[in-house]
Image (cartoon, rainbow, N blue to C red):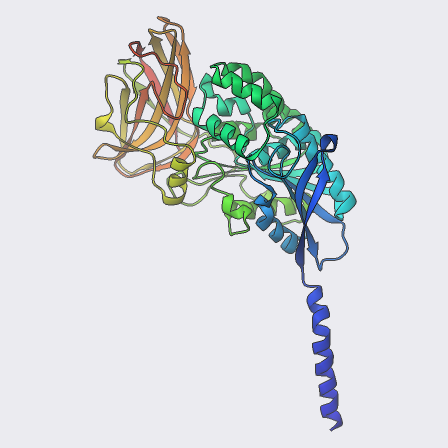
Length: 498
């Protein structure tokens, strides 16, 4: 009887103690807060704090929202980071958008300064550790994170996904306006936010055909111009982008990566703008966000998890396959194809084009459906077409294809669009990469060095490469004149291989 009573008492004690035990299971809590930014502007934030993990202070991650997206953007990922790794995460709406105050200054000084004030607030109000700070974001939030890392030494690590490092190079590649990207950004800004003077003036210049006047605002809004500060701060930088990003193409990211001297990691994978990491921001399984978490654990928390011993350049082929890992940006053997002379008429489009931003890259990333072309239907009167050698056993392209073009335009200004395809035996091609280039000088023969966007692409057995150059592409604002001509002299295409 006494033994039974003891057992009952022990059982009751265990059951009564269960709620207390559950209370210390690691979790998270979310609160909606208003944080004063630069000039007292109210920034509306979702603050995610760990629970059941002590009293802190806790390592801090600051996540500014993307262009036209509210603070709920990162809450799924933030909840996992708080619960699993003990971070305080502040996901806030960038100034000028949705519920935050102020106007859109296109990642200007006030927007970048907001990041530092959010850090100050979190230290004072959310049990954050000011010695363990990271910044992360997608697109507009990523650009802010890099710029803030240059200005604020407290930011030990940054993760920038689908970002720009050179704004002019992204939206005005080779002096050619990325029309679809500009239109999408302008429309989204008006619908979800309040454009400030800089954005209003930039749109006026664009509408009037004076886009070159917008270029001077790029430098202070581009991390590429602040690389010295980032390197001096020793910031650990993780960069992730998609091969087919229609807004911020990967070439500027690869070049920026090469100039970093601190801890760094580069991840390029199939998809379009923000598609590769979108579901990870919502808290769903995602390879990119898994690396982001490990990156912060190593360089914000100081956890020895081995990520610093891994190959830092991780590239997933644009047409499917597993990650290929390198110690540095690939720069191995290359095939050079000689291009014979041709003459084409300018100002007419062909069946070759770069696709539609957001849609074409997403189809490539999610379904492995490339932007295609039927090479026999490309009009040779208005486009130059060159075929390269066949690869009997296939090949892997890895790096930046380069063109050396000798051209003589008859008009003062002409826009050329170069497309590199993998072509099968029936003449059906899959777009590997492309690049626009503006040519000026009527009647002047000149040699142009053109870098196409970088890629990793597995060419199938028996297929070949083909280059198409025409003078109109729906994605871009063309300056080609109908009735003019372009004459190509002896030229060459160099394609790097892994």
